Length: 386
Ligand code: PMP
Image (cartoon, rainbow, N blue to C red; front, side):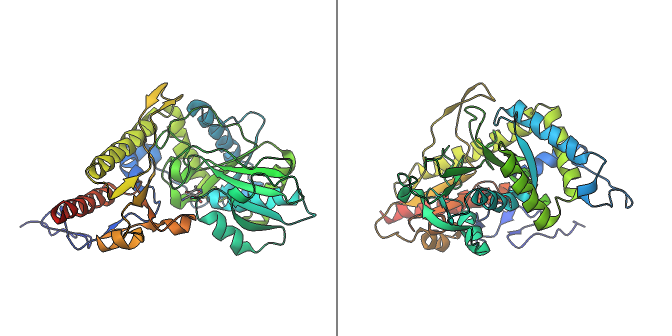
């Protein structure tokens, strides 16, 4: 007879293709599973086998040059994509970029020990900048909130460390530091500065830039990030942090990263970026079309922009939709969407108004399809009510 298929809880029918109407669309997290089909198509290129007796020693006294090879491939990758200058930069590896975010705050705060450094960022911002900085309760730094208060006040003795996310999570816009002055330093978080998500206008050339494998290849669970650092003292401090905190990034992680980057670099990035860009642009187009019939909701506007990687003007393809409930009575947008079976991330977590929520567009195709289904129902109910 027919093979019995085990569907996950949200699907039914003989071939698991029918989505249960009660199942919510969960577009909360930034889990980059849209890249899973790419690695299925390139199964052998991403696969790795490590014998039990290999790479047993601590990674800090690894003389087998995995880290050297990995560093070379990172530099090669940036030169192919044209998204960051690596000449004259030191590289530090991290357990995801998450570890490097605090390593950077710590290291920049050491330069000015006379007073506690203030950590700031521009709204709407990636929530971990606040939650992580608060969590560590350091005597050397403190989260002070939005940059608006600090734009013109760096002439005093408060030193400011600014998180700049470009393109930004949640709204996908390209950003630059806004706090200027002798006591201002920036941590440029470029997690999404890849052709999947944005036009690459020119190579980023800042003093401290942070990247992650998570949003490049989608291997968020491998926990690998890297920082490009101009200043040697900052490099030393970040290396010390990584060594004190975790004794370095695991060999296994470095091998996975090297295997994946070799494949990316070998095809000059074309394969993965074409896949990533096509997928994300397609999703953005479908979402935009779905919402074009209503004035009740809106999403951010991103203009087509010249991309030096594709050498042409290209359409937007952001990782997230920064979604707004426009109606007077819909001031709690999270609850409005939750009632319609859509789980989002509340705008208040990003330092913004409760009229905003973030929709993740980088999860699986099923997650995205279910989101569009639920939005179509929500938008058509509204027509019926008129
Ligand atoms: N920065 C930004 C802006 C992010 O969105 C994320 C992941 N959501 C990170 C850093 C951290 O990613 P990871 O630790 O996986 O490198």
